[in-house]
Length: 143
Image (cartoon, rainbow, N blue to C red; front, side, top):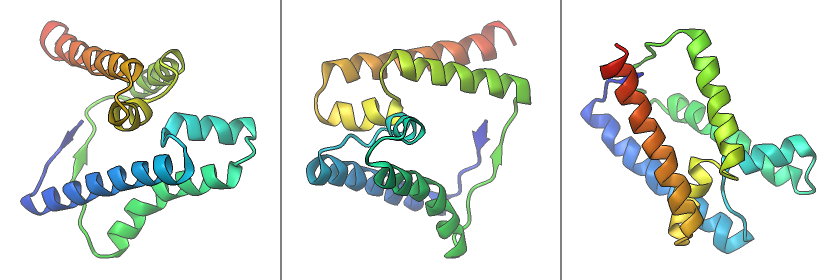
């Protein structure tokens, strides 16, 4: 997958990063919750007591890009250079990894690292390392 960035998109990326940080801080400081996507989705599927909070958080993830586009912003073109079966396998492997790591990249990488969690540091280094090795193998060894 490649994204063709335009200079105007960098400001939007910075604003998005700031909003993610503020949302994570609000969830942690205001509600005492970790803003991890896999945990929120798992709680919705398991019928957690705070289902409305979880659904509204997940709805915001879906609605925010739509509102961004409706506001007149242009998204950079995205080119996905993989076939559907490969994407399905990759998605399943990511799901399995989040179960083994007890969380996803957003929970560990954004929230866990900001809390100086050693477990989140190990999980994030594992996520990133596996990604680096996978890209290297697919692009340079198996290409």
